[in-house]
Length: 130
Image (tube, rainbow, N blue to C red; front, side):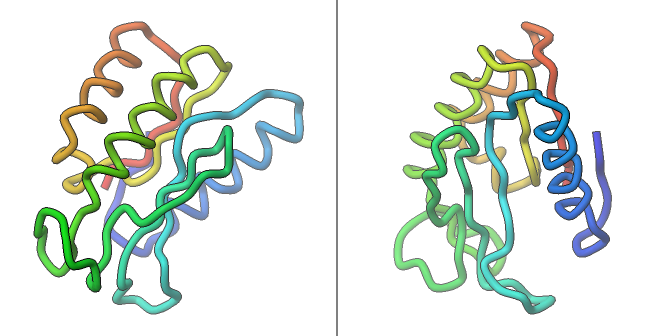
């Protein structure tokens, strides 16, 4: 588990860890979430399904739909459909990656059930908690 305040390098650490795990022959699945801008005040976050490469907007300051959380609107439909599916299907793999597990992710009941399933089945996981 890696945790801390925004912009201290949690995602960079996770990215390096994923690269290392893959380089020694293990399979990594689950989701990776990264900022969609290079500024300190991000305009959103993109969710990437590691197994398939499918990606989409998790949250953004410019979305017209979705639940409001601070400056962002959360794309709950995409997150529930893709994020939870990515985690549940990754239970078959060696490692599961969850990045930026925090307030936005807690608004998706499907994602929360997937996390609960992983924890209760003691699946190996790398988590970044925000």
